[in-house]
Amino acid sequence: MKKITKVVIPAAGFGTRFLPQTKAMPKEMLPIVDKPVIQYVVEEAIDSKIENIIIITGANKRAIEDHFDEPSQDLIKNLLSGKKEHLLEEIQRISRMANFIYIRQKGPYGNGTPVLTAEPVIEDEPFAVLWGDEFIYSKPPRLAQMIKVYEKFGGIIISGVKIENKEDLRRYGIADLTHVEDNVYKINKIIEKPEPSEAPSNIATHGGYILPPEIFPALRNIKPGKGGEVWLVDAINLLKKEGIPVYTVVIQNGKYYDTGNKFEYLKTVIEFAIDHKEINGEFRTFLKSLNL
Image (cartoon, rainbow, N blue to C red; front, side):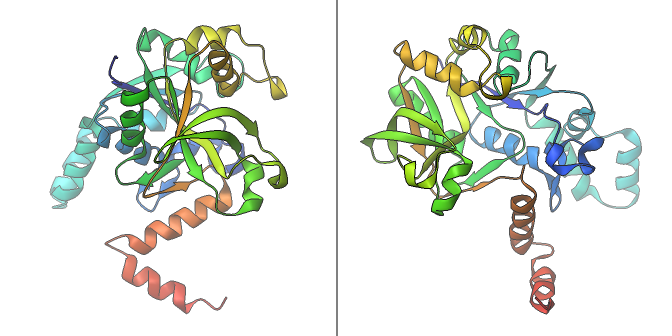
């Protein structure tokens, strides 16, 4: 079994839910206190022993490349003259923590297209996919938990999240499952955004994937689905019909942050600010002072 050495991070979307903020700035660069969303995703991959990061970009996404690039000489001089060596060390660490590859997305709209775009650099290897505008914060990292399951069972692995609020089930793809062991389940089928009363479980299969290279011909062979878009789940279902098993691992010791949604994004910022070592005390005091 080949090891997982590469992760694809789709980051080519328009971010329409955050307009006008995202007219010129990528939604993946929205800050969670002092780090952009996509940095949390990259750090998850690094903490899972993956060092080859393939980011699929589009128009107005140059800020992502700049963020993970080496700092400019002017910025270095400014930080050194201001005796801010600790900040210089941090931004240099960001640029050196992985091998970054950037590819411009081409093709029809849909979340399967950025995956297909990565084919030339993936070649004949299994690989991971993590969306660039959301993340699961967990220990051990979500991707590390998924890789462990992949190394035992093979096939396709999708991260699973337990949805506590029944009304929220209609927001996700919910899986019909057969228990395998511990927090591992075999997926029988995924029902997209079901009514809560019709949901087959409370497990959303979403956010992280380990895929075989067979996903590429599957993506080329499927027809556009709902909304005329190319959907990754349709290609996964095609491979499932061809005999490739699909599993989900319900992520342990973790929490899902949907930072592509305004309300959930603001909740994420507040939650991380409360725990931020530099501002948590003052911020907690400020929140308590609000007349709500």
